[in-house]
Amino acid sequence: MSSSALHGIIGYTITPFTAGGLAPDLKALGTSIDRMIESGVHAIAPLGSTGEGAYLSDAEWEQVSEFSIKRVAGRVPTVVSVSDLTTAKAVQRARFAEAQGADVVMVLPASYWKLSDDEILAHYKAIGESISVPIMLYNNPATSGIDMSVSLIMKIVKAVDNVTMVKESTGDIQRMHKLYQLSDGQIPFYNGSNPLALEALTAGAKGWCTAAPNLIPQLNLDLYAAVQNNDLEQARQLFYRQLPLLEFILKGGLPATIKAGLRLTGLEVGDPRLPVSPLNQAGCEQLLQTLKTLNVF
Image (cartoon, rainbow, N blue to C red; front, side, top):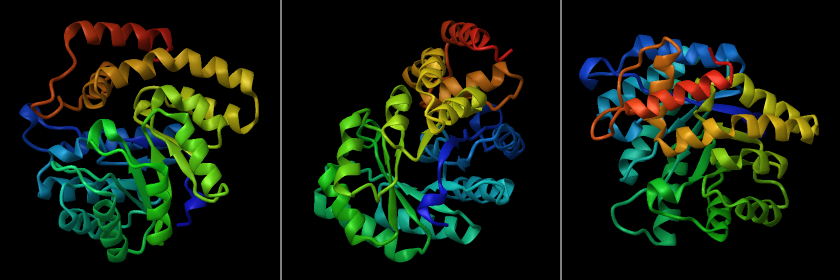
């Protein structure tokens, strides 16, 4: 697919687990995917931070990747996170996702050791040379420990033909403005910071990558539509209405808060995999009241 075709609300899936976190619960995963697609999201993104991709065995990762792509079944594009500490494993996962039919793979460089710019560039080159589908470069120093400068991002985009889009999650809107300026608006960028959604979309972001559609898809979609229609007053009202939940799910940890929220809506998806803890009772009560305020129930 062309990078221009990926737009709008990109919903990040959880990975449900059976009791005790012993194995992925594919039945619940299928239900959660169907819910988001039927709500109208523009794309589905499995195995990111919300999907606990880093906490799965290789066999589990492949199982969830294959199942997710087949369950989506081309109804919307799929963006599969293939990130890993090693280049070899990231290449392996990228090839697997492409073979299963992923439309885009997302790559977040992560390392125990601090990586140089040259090492990060080589990582993307190796992945890019191994597949033909587009790559979404993902910058999220809060989880990876690596903050790619706009100049490095532009260097990677120029050096790796299929790195054709950027997801920016630093929460710094100036990064997006600078990326737009340096690329003459030719590199699509996507917002990965929930509290920055309004600013990013009005600044020209092609889409919003978020786990929120698991719980409030219509509010997310309405916000995107309002910005597209240049109805900024409506967009502001929609954004500030959902902002308390957007901030809550981020501060409480995406797997824990989204799984707790899905449980409240009647879909049992298990707890996050240890060492990540489930949302505590006080958090669940706060989440329930927030969802009630948004008329989820």
